[in-house]
Amino acid sequence: MMITLLSIKDFFSTLFASYSADEHSINRLFIIYSLFSLFVVLLIGGAIILFIIKYNSKKKPEEPKQIFGHKNIEIIWTVIPFLIVMYFLFETVRTMNSISSPVQEGKRPDVIVIAHQWWWELRYPNARVITANELHIPVGKRFLMEIMSEDVIHSWWVPGLGPKMDAIPGRPNLSWISANTQGIYSGSCSEYCGTQHAGMRINVIAENSADYYKWVKHQQTAPDVPKDSIAQKGAMLFNQKACLGCHSISQDFNKMHVGPDLSHFASRQTILSGMLSNTRENVHRFLEDPQKVKEGVLMPNFRMKEDELNKILTYLEELK
Ligand code: CUA
Image (cartoon, rainbow, N blue to C red; front, top):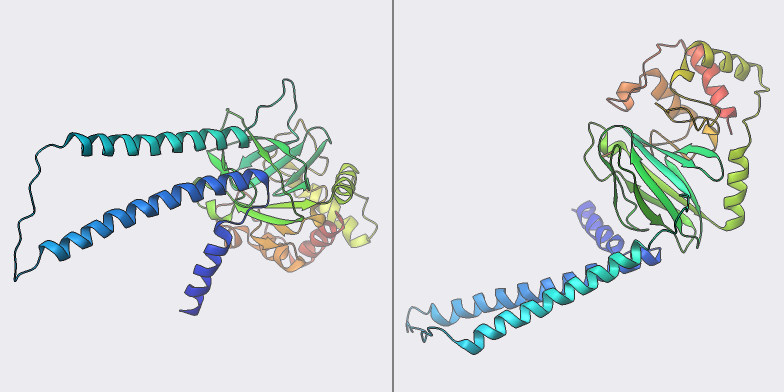
């Protein structure tokens, strides 16, 4: 009971939360529609209740006055809904226009979002950075995203920051994203895309400009060569086990990524597209039996021995 009440409270407190100008416009439109709908429900519901009471009295059945055709009433019930619908159209077009403002000719997207079953590849074409699942943006700057898919239809949605946008194979879509306050904003895939649709979460990390550019600079550097001898053995195993067949540690823009680029894996807060926090225990659990942790995932079970797992885990921890 308590959990249900808390969930309801949580639902309403996050329903109208907005952390960007775009989301603010969307919420405004949502409130306009909701208030009008509420008014209609109260009007109709109220009239039904009123008439039930008035004309259902067993003691004194009373036949209402019958009206056959009434020009004025007909004009009123045509004109008022027409004006309301026109107002909705005006507000909707205005909101759509403000959230999807035109893109200058020749402008390259700030980030390319590529949806995969079941994770998000994030490419920053200008900065030459490739990462996964955690989108970093600077506070106060509007980023242009090009959203596409490698397999089936997915949908990008971070409710606190802006509109939903479908990721469709072969048809890139453009959408803007911004945040006016620092923070981590969560979202998820919003178009059913298979077994792990629910395990395809998004975290947007909005930082101040200095931190953002620091992050970019760090991502641009190649990961350090492992110093620790166990990590060095882990790096060798990483090559032997053909991990590079799907994952790269080079942020190669020409490569089609089957699994996330792991160049700076240890600098991410979560693994498996936001499903678990990035701790040694969680990565261990996943590598030991990927299907048990994320059913349907493409990652094969390499049936590694405990000491092999330890080497790989130590190596991954060094990919800061
Ligand atoms: Cu991807 Cu649902």
